[in-house]
Amino acid sequence: MNLASYQKWANHRILKAIHKMPSDNYFKDIKLPYGSVHATINHLIAAHHLWRYRLAKIGTLPVSLVHIFHTTFDDTTNAINILDDFWVNFLNKQTVVWYETHNTIEFQDGRLFTYANNQWLNHFWHHQSIIRGQLQTALQQQDIPCNQLDLIFYLMATDSKT
Image 1: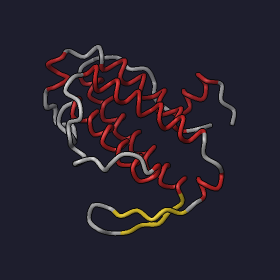
Image 2: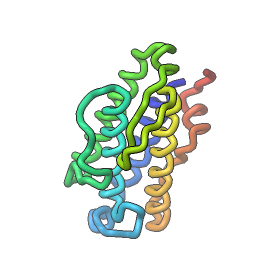
Image 3: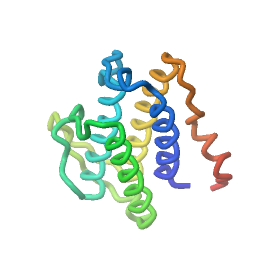
Image 4: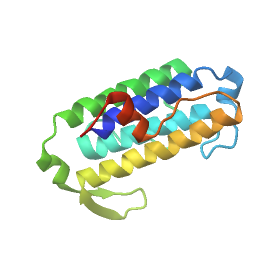
C-alpha cells in the first residue's frame, strides 16, 4: 500500500465535504492555525511543494508555508488533485533503494537533518493528516458532515491487504 494513494483518497473526501461549506465561511478566519479553511488548504499545497522540492527535486521551495497559491476553492481543489496525482505516480516509480536512501534536508532555521526518504515521507503524510484533522474539526463546528478519513477506512474501502 502506498500512503500517497491514501492521501489522495482522504483529500478527495475532505474537499468534497468542504465544497458544501458556504463561501463566506470558507474564507472567514475561524481561528484555525492558518486562519481560514481556504488558507489551511493552501498550507497543504505549500507542504506539497516543499516536500516535492526536497524529495523529488522538482519545482522550487514555496515562498512561505502560509502563501496563498490559489484564490478560489475550485483552483485550490484542482491544485491538490494534481499534487496528489504527482505523489502517487512519482512514488509508484521509486525502488526500495530510493525509499531507503538517506537524504539531508536543511530546515528554514538552517539546521540539517538526515533521514531515509521513507522517514521523510512518513513525516509528510503525518503532517497532511494533522491538517486534514483541523479541516474536519472546522466542518464539524459548522455541522457539515464529512466521511471518515482514518487510514483503516481507506484500507476497508479499497480492500487493501498489503
